[in-house]
Image (cartoon, rainbow, N blue to C red):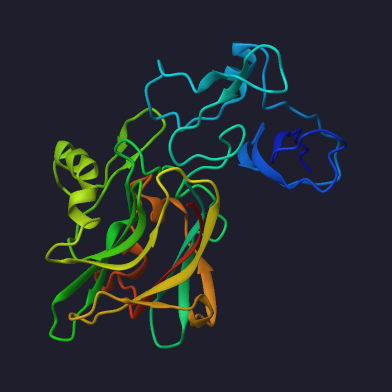
Length: 313
């Protein structure tokens, strides 16, 4: 079979000397000929990187940033240290990032989607192996609201009407919140170049881009057609992570915006995996192609959206 060589970086928490025994290491991004993946710590040699740097450029090389802020603003700052005669250079993290090298992002983890098509508990699933779909939820700049999925989920209501539901994950300096909206909007995906992938919905591309910029106002704020169903407080200077482990149950109930349930209550007897691009809006593939009755598919009965996240607080 094919063989690939990988290079991984692992970052520990602070250590003030001695051998690196029992230090918790974090898996970082790995790169190979086949692309990126999440590194897993195994039986391998490692090298230590000091978080106190004697030179500015040493520090600058290791501080991790969101990549979304001003490139002119350096994260490397000089600080006085009682252990050294001269100042040392340390990473001054963007708000929400924690760790000696700012390696812990404001939101990490997975968001998983379970679409139940009929009463046989058969579900289409995506997100179980996707570690990237909350990477750009920063609570900074314009990255404060993440629509999930990026296109609305459409149920057939009891009176023949269409019931639209969509989650909005919101983060700012003080809170992480989960909203459910009936706005029925598609939000294009911004790629690494700052461009947008547009859904073939017959609409105007400029309008789609504006909708992404205004997602906070449309589905991440309390208003008619949008309800906040979960919220936790955050410190304006986070120092740790809080685990979010819950699921949101959605259905065709026109008077309800869903409810919080235990992930163990997700009732899928059989599962089939979807293309991840259908969930994150990064291509023209549509979730509706999976359940649209006009395409000879079985319509949605229920949907669970599971959050398995670590939020800096």
